[in-house]
Length: 345
Figure 1 (cartoon, rainbow, N blue to C red):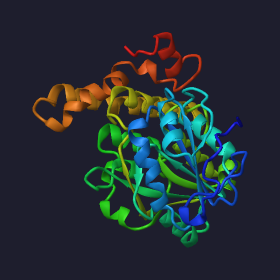
Figure 2: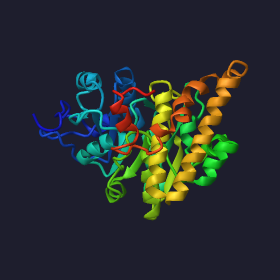
Figure 3: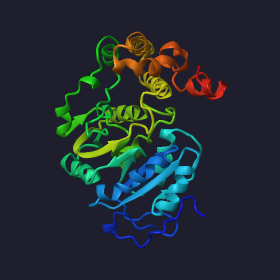
Figure 4: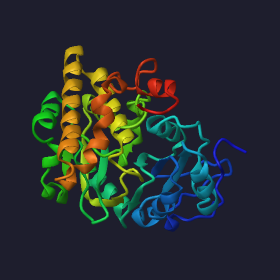
């Protein structure tokens, strides 16, 4: 057995949308390598992978998958999609490390990060390549994700971290919440793209050494775009590249997801801001979380849309020590959860 699971589709043609693979599991002549990091995603992975051929009809692609979870997703994919290249699991190493491992095996000129809870619309990847032709000066192109009601979701409006943005979130509304919907109907140059459906040139990815593996979950793409921008790269959101996003195949406002997001944000400020700015930024982040927690606790019964906030922001507000140091191996979130047997307060 080679490091990569060999494919049973060596006779595939470009019309199939699947790049033929050699006996040692390496794809030849691939335009784009689609990278999927799965974590207990068996309930959604079939729709995700099945959506790719109709989304990418004009370029040759390969799909690579690594299972950070219990192995059930890998087992299903081996059975249902033998053309997918399985990279051996290294355990639950996080989103950044998983994608980096996949990228090391990628054969394409482009790498496309695809969340397992994404279902691409027909022509979505074709539209990204039209974006490549229209904006060749860019290094990354991302799509527009929609919810179950076909409305663009908040993942399309990731704000660039700044003290001004954190102050807006703490004392008003974040700029992401105020993004005009019409902005998503046209292509646009942006500071950040959603990491669950974004395509990079392989050369830019390699120049940045991929995602920073200090980030376990959340903000790793923010960090990557920040580093690429400092190198002079630009990024475009392509309005015609669309897909349905299940939002984490779980409760997107769960306390643990919000906690991981807080830790990722803290990690970013520590890595890229001065010491004073980082402390102030994390404080403003805590203020915003506490406002939401108290709003849910005090007003949730009278205002239904606030009901989930008390639960979602409880850990971030009441236990800032859990996330304040980011993912620091000695004192950060992962270290503290390990000491607690994986359970938060």
